[in-house]
Image (cartoon, rainbow, N blue to C red; front, top):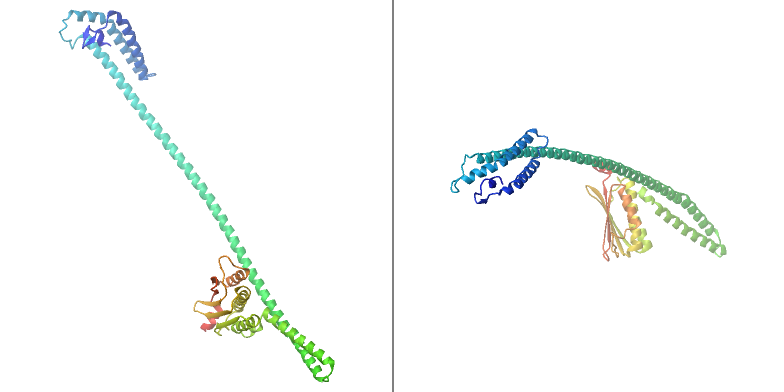
Length: 384
């Protein structure tokens, strides 16, 4: 705009008319104000002073335009512009002022950008630290809650284990008391009632022998004697079912064989017992457990298996006592058909730290495997 007002023709550009100069001057002032606003120099006295100097330079240049235009009209059109002419020097001076302001603003902008970047980095660092603090706080709180939950669960588990242990001990005590009561009751039935009824039978036999042959009372005495003998057998059976005296008097294997004979006599089931007779060192808890497990297994076989034969095998190994009860019955699915009898076996064997395993298939029979650890007392006796 400044150059276009120098001469009628300058670098192919049309020179301004005299009438266009005031409007161009006003437009130049407006552009200068806009340029000042783009510098964002509020509060910077040096920048404001440079803007004032630039405005003065432009005003001075504009005021000298008529004189410069008159001088240019006197020069030949073919003559090149003078590089050192006053008008060119004024334009260069104004250009240098604008460039200085631009450079100053660029430096100020770069400084502001760096300051803003530093501020943002600081805020980001603070935000990151705060986020880390919050995250670590949440982790610590969650860890504390998890530890509290773990301690509570561990305490609950210990209480459950203690309750189960106490319940198992109570069940063992109850079972021992039950076995002791059975032993006493069996002894009383065998000794008291058995001896009394045996004495009554002897007396009835004596009376019967002293009576005359055709005495009608003699037949009545024979009937009473027969009823008394049946009652004695029933009492003997009840006493043996409660607890066979031979389990305490003769040991485990004779009691198992007697039990097999009794089951065979009452049900017709063929029962075979294979066991070593070297079991006198077994403690009473082991003898009772094995006898009751076999009793329950035979009862289940008679009641549910529809079997014709049962094999009972009891043997020692170096690490354990192994009991096996196998039948040739109809079998079942142990995974879904577990009755109270099997649960009772598992509970009884579990109190001696043993294990129960049941294998059964439809129409292929059932096998019950009992594994018990060798008792310390029996192991020491056998070693001695």
